[in-house]
Picture (tube, rainbow, N blue to C red):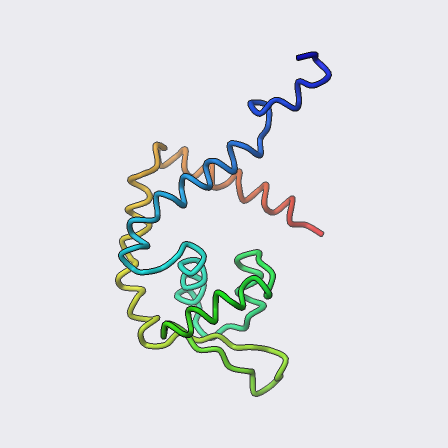
Length: 146
């Protein structure tokens, strides 16, 4: 391949190892999430709510960097399964307030082992994991600027 096309080689792409690492990490979550009967996106939503219950849809969308139209079907499924409730805000009917049910709150105790389980799966030292975390959030912050 000529030098002109060197940048088109898969091995020269940053996006590919990021994509692959993300896919593999999410795959490592699967055994624990299966026990909790959750998908990875559902787990992310619940983590936001475990951190701060009773938030509006836009807060969850902002934290997860997802569009509300992507979150709505996910929230509906979690509501149907009894983990959360969605209600229109009494102050502003345009806002939807999401709150955990007792079942959603109690799932937090069951999920406590998930982060440690994943940490054991990663072939990184604590220092390497912290550095990767720092670099990824630096990248996310810069790319997320509007």
